[in-house]
Length: 143
Figure 1 (cartoon, rainbow, N blue to C red):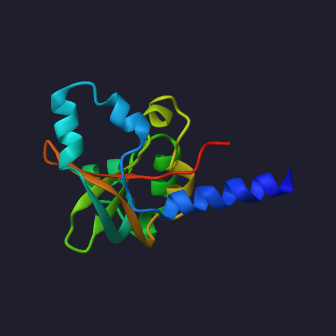
Figure 2 (spheres, rainbow, N blue to C red):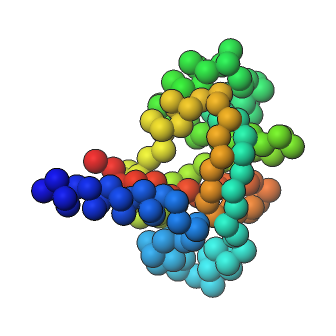
């Protein structure tokens, strides 16, 4: 059992570090040609920036150490998390696998609430649609 747990942990780590790509559930969810074109326009991207909660940042410009506790609380209570890059581009972060995200089985809230106001580097599939920058990132399966 310990060996199986170790193998699963290593597989999750490898998946977390692999070149970003759309998962099978995301590809399956692209039901129309228009959906498939949006997916095709996305590209793997690595960004570095400050972790912010999107709600307070876009509403009041709140960020940084002074907003760390509030931001973490917002993210833990279902507000979206984002990365604010040095050029002030805000990327909304989303768990990449479509079906687990839709079904509440994939979350980045706890991980990024703990990193609130920190500078991080993260890789994923970058989409710009409707003027919104989103980075879809790999997440380990929910326990």
